[in-house]
Image 1 (cartoon, rainbow over the protein chains, first blue to last red):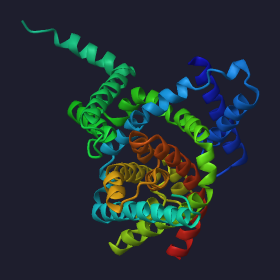
Image 2 (image 1 turned 90 degrees about the vertical axis):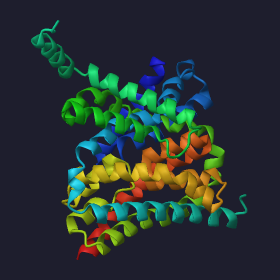
Image 3 (image 1 turned 90 degrees about the horizontal axis):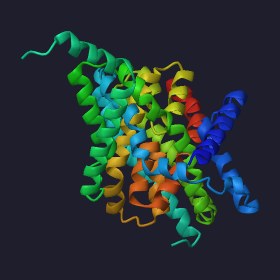
Amino acid sequence: MIGSLAVILGCQLLGEVLARGLGLPVPGPVIGMAAMVGVLWLRERFAPPVLAGVEPAGRFLLAHLSLLFVPAGVGVVGNLEVLAAEWLALAAALMVSTVLTLVVSVVSFRVVARMLGQA
Amino acid sequence: MARDASLDFALWVYLTEGPLLWLTVTLAAYAVADWLSARAGRHPLVNPVLISVVLVGGLLLASGTDYATYFEGAQFIHFLLGPATVALALPLWEHRALVLRSALPMLAALVAGSVTAAVSALAVAWAFGASDAVLVAIAPKSVTAGVAMSITEGLGGNPALTAVLVILTGMIGALVVTPLMNGLGIRDYRARGFAVGLASHGIGTARAFQVDPVAGTFAGIAIGLNAVMTAVIVPWLLRIWLS
């Protein structure tokens, strides 16, 4: 568990250093995700004993992903007044845009998948 | 017999000075919310993030606690968002064959979805007479909070407003995605997951993992891809829109 967490944090650290150091528009943890894919490839290719138990901490975090958004979500409760002035425009824009984005994304995905003969 | 009021006060000061109280409250609220969600068979409206936020937010308001105090405890949970993003590599690796086979459908959904997310938010807000400040804040609302805030900040907007809009977008996506996709008759969990990750980032992804591991995997990929795509198109789009 601890070794697994250290590997994950190491990947994130590498991602943050690269993102900030090179001024990339990608968040550090997303680069860390790519680095973690590299770690998993290494594990598959060379099976070093040090990477044998690399999964538990990650599995644990993903199983409780909802919990991790609670602190940020609570921030909305305390900041609702920033919405007050133009709440109707904001509510309409968020509702319409989120639903439309879901529909356009899923339909685009399916159209191309079907063209490729994927079920 | 009346308790010593100054003793109660000392206890309250102790609890509000350290992170223990609000860290415990956050975990307890989530435990209750997750239990309710499981009891409801993971019904989309019984969303654990929303329920936890209402429980904790209510307690903060009732106790007159400000967010900065709360966050001193909650930051330990908030910090784990970064490691959790890294951990998305695990399901990605597990499903890598399916992911590689889906590269072209994902690319199509990414381009169409990313443009739709920004343009439709701008168009509706503009039609309702929103100010330029609001337009700048709402355009990146579908991407993960850190990236959205830096896009808004780079354009001279208010990142705090963006943060609130990003979280609300995540909640809306997580609440509507299941009934919407069922209504559209979409049974491809790659497509369902990718759409919700693109439209409503991590909160949508958390919902996707509740429904199906493949959906969660593709939602996680969409968060990363849309962060890059939006960081490129939104500044360009807003310069045209506001000129």
